[in-house]
Structure formats: C-alpha cells, structure tokens
Image 1: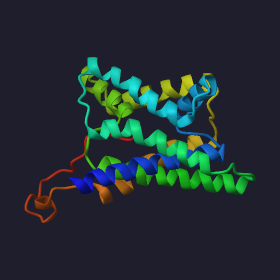
Image 2 (image 1 turned 90 degrees about the vertical axis):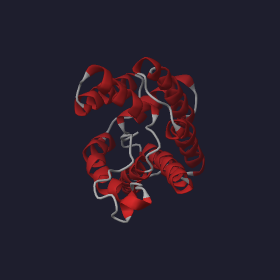
Image 3 (image 1 turned 180 degrees about the horizontal axis):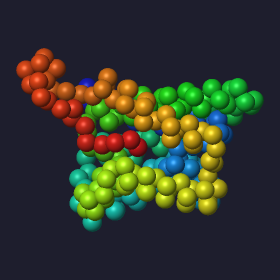
Image 4 (image 1 turned 180 degrees about the vertical axis):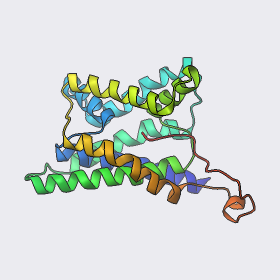
Amino acid sequence: MIRRIAQLLFGLALYGFASALMLRSELGLSPWNVFHQGVANHTHLSFGTVVGLTGGVLLLFWIPLRQRVGLGTVANVLVIGTAADVTLAHLPEAHGLAPRLALLALGVTLTGVASGLYIGAGLEPGPRDGIMTGLVKRTGWSIRTTRTAVELAALAIGVVLGGKVGVGTVVYALAIGPLVHFFLPKFTWRAPAAREGNLPNATPATSGKIH
C-alpha cells in the first residue's frame, strides 16, 4: 500500500509539473487547463489554486452522482495544483520558438507518464474523472461521448474566459491517448499473486481515467 501511495503522489506531482511546462510554452493547454487558466485570469488567483478549487467544487457534483471519494481523489485536489504553482514560481518564461516547443513536447510526454503513474496506483479517480464516470453510470452514455462532452464544455468556457488554445491543445488531444496507452501498463499495480502468475485472469487495480 505504501508503494501505491508513493506512486500516486509522485504521479500527481509530475502531472502538476507537466501542466506548468505546457503553461510556460504558451502554445496551448489541455481542455481543463484552458478552463483553469481562464478562471485564473479573471479571479487573480494562481493557476494551481484554481486547479485545486475546481477539483473541490466538482466533488459537490459527486453527491447526486453517488461517486465514492477515495485517497486518490483527495490527493488529486491537493497535489496537482500545488505542484504546478511551485514549478511556475521557479520556471522562467521561455523566449523563442524552439524552447517553447521543447517545453510543450516535454509537458505532453510527462503528462502521459504521470497519468500512467497515478491511474496505475488504482486509488480512486480524480474529481474531473469522477464526473465523467458518474455520468456514464447515471446516463448510460459511452465513456467516449461523455468525456468528449465534458472536456469540450470545459474548453469552451475556458476559451470564453481567455484561456490559451493553440497547437499545444491539438498536440495534447492527439498524443495523450497513445501516451497513456503506452505508459499505463508499465505502472499498473497488481497484487503479488497476480504478478507471480497465480491469478492469470487478474485485472489492473485501476478505477480512474485521465485527469
């Protein structure tokens, strides 16, 4: 259990670090981070503070959706935004297209690694994923349709509020699925019996999707 918690926390911190890299690239953000940046622009709160507060508010919507809050859920709210703010406080702005492209590429790649780590720990989904899985259970919609609708809604609101959309948003949309598909099996936690082959039909102990 200690190993899983350590993996969860490291994955979430890495996710916040990767988000800050994409923010510094100024080439576009993931849909939810477009929303977070837009809210931050209008509230004068830090980017990371908005990430955490958004997660907390979304948990209120878990109540009618009957979603279960777990350690991974709480850690998601507390760690990602904090890690993003700490990184932004020490990472200077990038000047020139080449450094910005490098930040974007590294940010997207590390987001894939981070997602594999914290999802693979199998300690309950984050607030945003919980909204998606809760809606799937309550409405019968497909995960693909529900996730697309939720992220497009976050993106649209973020654009209206002035969040940054650009080539990075497109790169993220195209790359994050394959990246998580590659990294998740490498970090998925399994019980010792399953790892030793005593339970050949054991499945990964994951319950969440991407942040």
